[in-house]
Image 1 (spheres, helix red, strand yellow):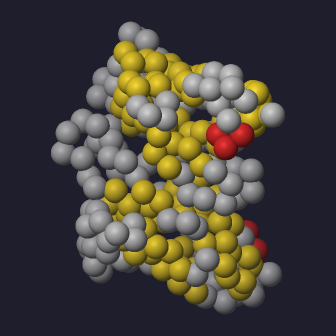
Image 2 (image 1 turned 180 degrees about the vertical axis):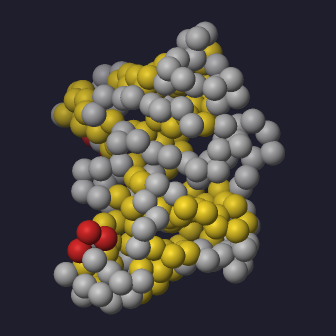
Length: 116
Length: 110
């Protein structure tokens, strides 16, 4: 199993450009999410999905779009990149627990995005 | 979602036991306590999870007092490779949003 795969690993964009960060998982997890991490900071939730066709906003959704057409893929789209979106982006997936415990989240290696 | 408070940073020496305490005063009855570890330039990794008393695995121990308003992650005999950021999360399975705080930056010195 590859786990959670993010592409690309590095990307430089010009202000105003758009792009899609790819995230794929091969664990058949229902739950997928995107986080951004700024230097020296914790992770902030951008968007998440509890299954194909279902997405919702996290803490910092502005400037980002997501869709979930399959269980495996959860792409993150930057519509018009801004320097404030310079960050490291992490995708995560987990199953949805049927008990009271919280399912372990598996993270990708991250995409380092610079907007100039 | 219960808010958590943990120290911003800690230093320790190789071979020492490190305890990182997390405060979560408004934890709900069904909430679990979960800890993640993040090495530089990597995504977070699940370490341990517990509900009450003590949980131990090959990496760490988690101590939760009876009132569950705090928890302590214990790392035995740390090495330089334990230098990382440690996040405490509190939530239940009904919480769709998995929220990370700023974490505790642990620096192990030789």
